[in-house]
Image (cartoon, rainbow, N blue to C red):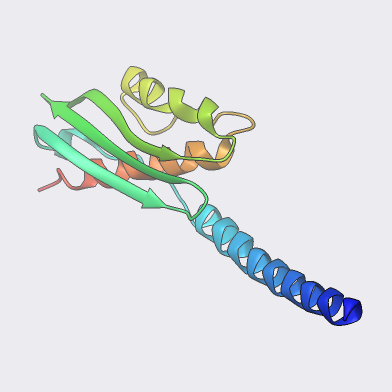
Length: 128
């Protein structure tokens, strides 16, 4: 009886391990696929724009407000992250630089990239 239970637990553990590996690979692929393009703010109309990006382990939703071709505010509406809380300074850096060309945060690189991608997607909604 003990051997059967142990065997069942080992099989279940291997199954979970395989699923976890696929999950992590997909997460890494989604983050690696992010290529931040700087958006020409002169092309973005005034307004509020929502941007979202889901990289499985990191999910971000932002609201970007543009006025007179400048980013006025970026609200981080959602940031599901592992250890990426430090990246929550990225919106302020983007506002200060008026550009998506800002440094990622060491130790929170994935969250930084996902936040930047969500901001980019929001800004692109304002292009005519």
